[in-house]
Image (cartoon, rainbow, N blue to C red; front, side):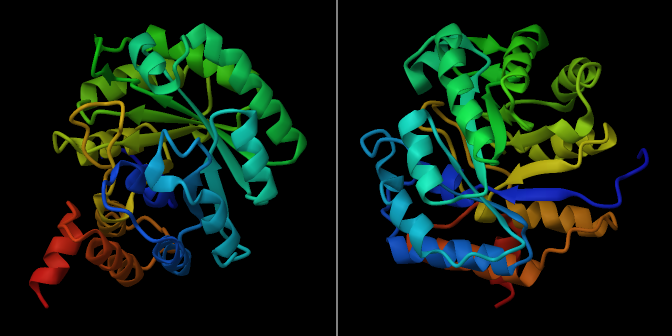
Length: 301
């Protein structure tokens, strides 16, 4: 392997990207407990919810209550996903540290997810980013379907680049590149990063892998070899996408942690705390989560 970084940065998106796709309603107090447990694990970034209209994501209809009730640890960056100015207003009222906006690199997925064309989405997100930056918020631009689209098939790097350019020019601090349906293989990761790293520094890029085909770890290692140090993951392997049929959960935070610790990379995150959190939310959902580390831990009990 090439030279590995001394330190990596994980953002757990389980409370948002994970729970948004679950049919089982998780009580507000349990969401709060989940987020507080994640903060106690040593994670420095947690995406707590999404300020979208409840009819679109019913599972996160209590976003404002969750934001109000969580314990705020001073060294943790709390963020939420917002679709528009109304969502941003709620996020600003909650005084979160970070704001995430989202769009797709493929036209069909963008229209199904946002109900707008890609070109129609740019000015909406530009306005959100402008206000968020005025309020000194860290802004992440999520770009979905950067490798494959469930409706259009393979996404080419030249489709992704204009979206990245628009988001960064609008003021986004980071780009989170989503393997939304979990179908990418390392050669696709290489092809995209070859193009993006010609244009942007690696510290601007966050890799967001789903594990539908079991390729998330291979893709993550490929990204590491390109110098990427920021990754999204989800406790327990929670997740999916309401607008991407067949998409499985994000790569499990505790599985990523096992890999990084095995490679000698510093994280500052406690595996025991993460496993406790994963076991807690698994019990609330009443179903087995895909985390391999959690499965191994429970088999020993």
